[in-house]
Length: 104
Image (cartoon, rainbow, N blue to C red; front, side, top):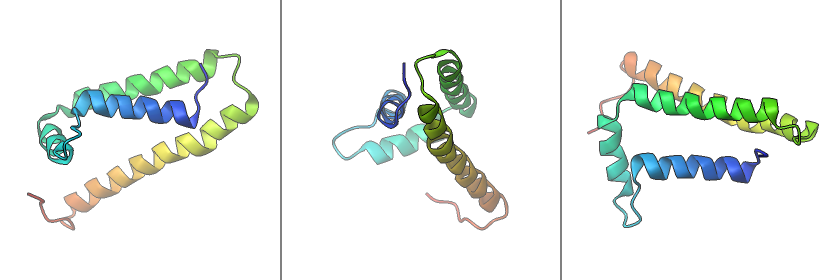
């Protein structure tokens, strides 16, 4: 299985749709917000690390992946993941330092 931008996007959308049950009727944001508050973070991390493990297995074992595909995956997809992790870390640091007011 090749990891392309399209397949990665599809995997992420499927995961969000399955896990957060986003609705099409406009209530999706509120549903996601209330689910976020009740979701066990450890379960979320297990799912994320599981997906990353699956990607690592594909990258390691899929001999049909070309050098340019692997390079693109590394420079584009991994960069996006690292950026999101950085944003999350920054939000946590800002929250801990009192720079964010609590959102109701």
